[in-house]
Length: 267
Length: 247
Image (tube, rainbow over all chains, first blue to last red; front, side, top):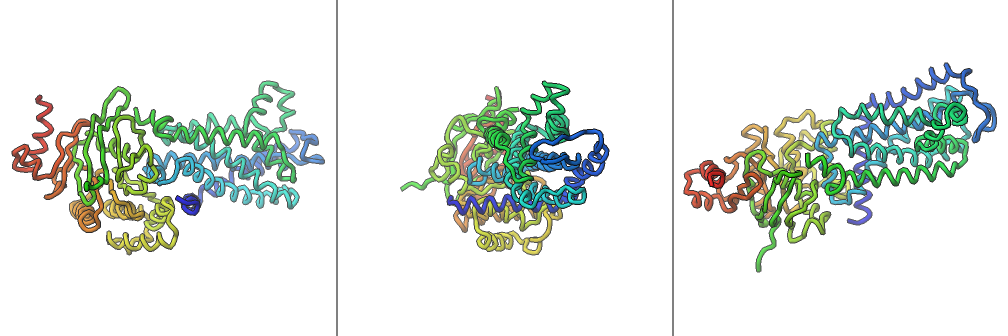
């Protein structure tokens, strides 16, 4: 197999992801509505409750809606990453995963291609959200829209890799509800998405440390800084490391001789 | 000069925990052969297919595809194999064409080449008019035809079919059988056709009887009839399965 074959394979996987996305317009709608509800109701309600002092990358006092926008973008990426992993569980139950797994290309490539294809769909949704968010005067500088692209891709890869890892561990579609309760919500709330971490530190040092260790915090911060054309190097390093770890474990999980596939087969 | 078998399985064993589901399985399929892997449900047929396609890791014995050990050259082996799984593997929300283009992409084919091959294979299974239909709208028989067409798109030399006629009506079953046999006869493909339906063993077919994970007999249908002195394949199968149990 030459590089062109790999490229065609990736294009095929990305195209399928796109077609599935188009077939599920409800998914697109709810993926956008969810963060917009937060923005329209939650941010308005908390407008005067939470004081946001001047913290980098902001150079002035900002409305609460502006503060939570990066967290809501990361929320889109997280839900998409998890939905993509849900589709892997669905694929496995429906059998179409077998077709992917018997393709004559290395398994790590197939899983990475599936991951990247999901990220492309996520990034498009994140930009759609940014366009609608203009209504709430969330207006980063023009170069922020370009600078945020790599941050979106990296964050999407990390969250997608986590989803992939979870999908290798989930036995059935029904168990996905537990992912919502035990992964998505804790990750979202124990992060800097809704409140600055110095606020959290004043209340609980333990929770602050948990938030700092949470890779989702770093996804939010990387996006937040990138929207203003700045790089948050610590967050970038954490995300690269987390992506590598999650993806390696997912490839291991999908290896028939080693990971959970083998254990599942044995049951 | 001996012909390299399309599929050569030697001493294959597999365990699910303490349960041994395949024991010392040995047989081969030559190019152009239509071989029926006959066994009751739970005989180990699907496990054997999963091992041959690397969905399960293989521990005991060897599997060779055209002389290549699948543990050493798995990707090249997969390129030579066309697979129809026991359970449907088409995406019901995509059209027939979209499913087939996806498969071609997974095998690295260009869009143009894929289009050409899809048109030809779909025509052979008589579904040209349904190309834009969603798979969900197709009947069970039509879906199976799409799966056999898909298995041939990357031009494999070995076809593995795991119970491909389960749940089909008589006409669809016959179509699938005739199509697979024709591919072996006219195009020299090797086919391993797993089934529990004895009447799918036609005249001239080679039969491997698998029971409780062991090969009970391996030979031409006529040979098995002679060996068991049975008047029909059904009686021959029952004899082969019962013999060892009685012992």
